[in-house]
Image (cartoon, rainbow, N blue to C red; front, side):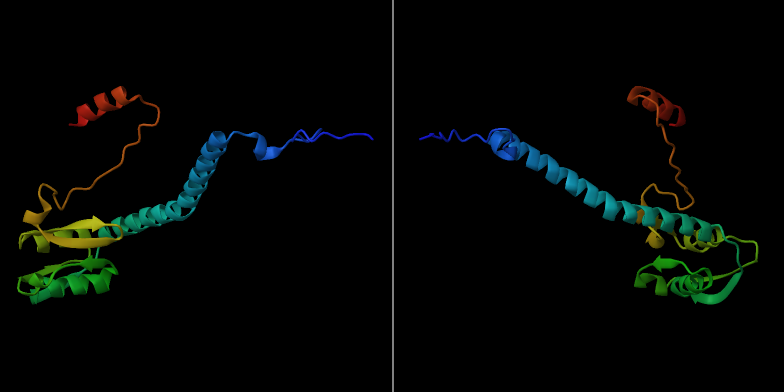
Length: 172
């Protein structure tokens, strides 16, 4: 009678995950889940971040586009609606701008940025780019943010944090 003893081992083949300790399997599953989430985030949100960067570039281009506009006895809201129509830019503002009246005219060479700065700051308002839109706020709400301020990203790819800090101090 040739006896066969079952040792729980399969000869000549790996047992796969059954031979890996439970703690290590748990850690591996967490790592794989994290990788899957990172890939999913990069796929969906990376595209959204790219879309947002594109919207910001388009908004900046519109702000630098010249055009002519003239309004008399018009509320700031009327000005902003006219600007939305002429420059095809999204503008968000509150109803309080209905009571603020501004008269003015701008020639063909005046950029949208210059027009907004002139009509808004004359009534103590400014604008802040948010994604591809402009949000109109009172200058008090904006704090130290100058409506004419234009931010720029400077990349420091091959610098240590100490070197980067030294370079930032130069600009400060």
